[in-house]
Image (cartoon, rainbow over all chains, first blue to last red; front, top):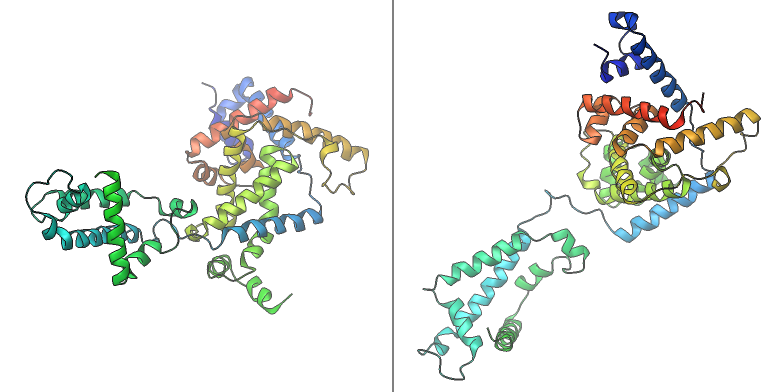
Length: 193
Length: 188
């Protein structure tokens, strides 16, 4: 049986001695193959890469510096990123929505909606109903959606500024909360939810 | 050289990376300066032309910068950069048919010491071998380049390419065999 590729490579690279392979002495085909391997390695080794000029290196470093400057600071790695921050922030926003909705709930829950009743209110009621299983469903949905978010990708795409979600949750004053509530109601009414 | 740059120059690789992550200007410049030549040579071996090698080298450093926080110092910075370089080159090679340059195209190449006829013949021979290497299948090319020109062990190549030592040796064997077929007897 002829020598295998890995054996021939070991012989050509000198990590195995030819004397340790008795087959070689008896097989002209393997000897020829080994000779060809050595010749090709020698031919390939003799090929130098044209050396760029010193001027090129200056230009190259400048180009890299510009490209890096456009990047900003190196990003956090996957594991060092507080990956729960965004889902928690989204969940907190959902909490704010629920709180706003539950605040309005009792005023807008008198029995079945009359003709022309605002759909937005009905929707908010549904979310705010402590008896409704949809509470958990909505939160679960928010958590699932947010847990799949590619945070770095979103930031790169300009979809989220640094800390914007956290900021939205933690820095709303009373007036802003009222405005948020009004906007949510408007939006829900417009979408017919 | 300013005192801050001198202080950076004394840092080992890991601390240089930390300095870079800490926002010290000049730290990444130093990394680029130390490794740009080897990265460029790696890229050139893959694409056989200056323009693409230059673009790919820049891409390697940009990716390295983006992923700098993932460098743990378990391998050398050079090996880590090679790994990025091989991935960048293999992706580019598969996405684009690259052209080997003619000698006339190498306008950036310093050939002041290459005027002797032997040197010209050697250049011609080298150009043919590089063109042949550029025609090898991706993994064979990567294996040949890393083994022949960057003195990486079979195990290191296996790590970079995500394969086994046996597969690396087989790829190397077939790369040399294909090189022989592509070149015939013209380089001997």
